[in-house]
Amino acid sequence: MKNLYLRIAPDSFHYLKFILEGYDNLAILSSVDMKKGVVRLRYSSGLESEMFKLLKSIAGRLL
Image 1 (cartoon, rainbow, N blue to C red):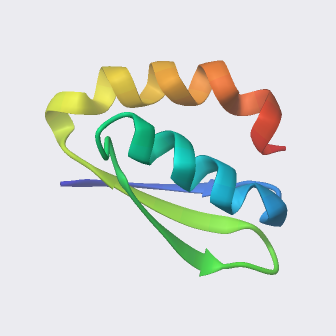
Image 2: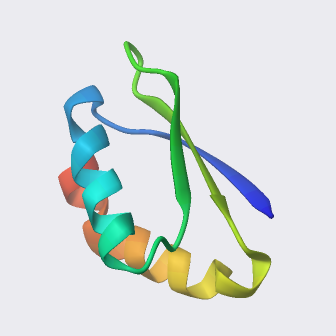
């Protein structure tokens, strides 16, 4: 499992969780610091390419 830490808009947490669940739980999302919008994504290294493609496509909605 790989870890990726991101800073998103705090009110985007549930949106990101919903999207990840829609992709058959592509990653496990957990909050690190909700006030600052810091989250951790845990995902399989074999899904790294898919993970970054998805994040790139929704990046504007997470800010």
